[in-house]
Amino acid sequence: MPTSPTRTTSRQTVQSAEIGAEILKALARLGPAASLSSLSEEAGMAPAKAHRYLQAMIASGLAAQEKHSGRYTLGPEAIKIGMAAIAQIDVVGSISEMLPDLRDDTGYTCFIAVWGGLGATVVRVMETIGEVTVLTRTGAHMPLLRSATGLMFATWLPPQERDAEAAREPAELQEQLLDPASPLCARLESIRQSGISTVQGLMVPGIDAMSAPVFGARSEIVAVVTLIGTDNGFDRSPDGTLAQKLTAFARAASAKLGAPD
Image (cartoon, rainbow, N blue to C red; front, side, top):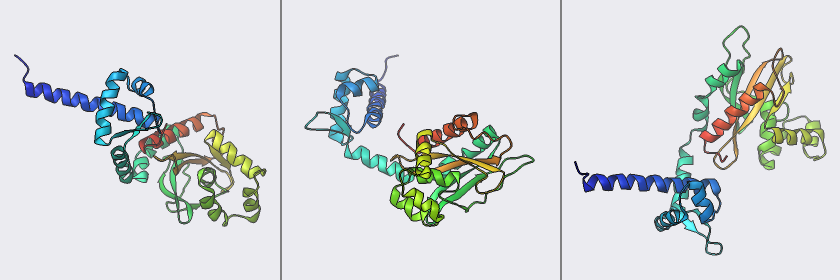
């Protein structure tokens, strides 16, 4: 039975949309600007084919071409779509549904904190089910420089936001924060490099904590995920199994929120 012209046209339209989507995703991955050769390679198609689609996307505002370099960028309409998607993201809700898996995978209580008017604030808690339960109250505020959660925010927040909250900390820590050569600043740089912050019995004797950052679509820190447990068996090594699981969770959460690779 011969294929109807309508069915053929419909299939071609779907294929064209799929190809256009691949080019858009390649533009986003290679941004802020990319050459035709790199785009075609990233999208897995011939340069001539990519060029044809790019011209159509430029006409619709989904792509743009720099006059001085000839490189391609996301167009104004694509940027509008991206901003609309960002506005619809529920940061806490998107990560919260992942927490039970982290708790079950590690065997430790975990929680999510976001940055609010009073600093690092716990918004979701998933407790362990067993003989030992470490309680962390939703709504609790974690100190900036004396908790694993706060230290992670201190590492990634813009200085003006961080320093305003640091006024609540002991004078000695405030002074160290302003001294690039201080042990505290060295610790923050170490946290930035490893992606993991830990404390041992700092807030509560016998309770350890480990945190990792969650980033948003603009590469800004939007939340911190933390594991807590008794210091008996809690592996605080930044390259240990527990840290690897926490890092994998944070990366998956960041990807879900649209963070760049």
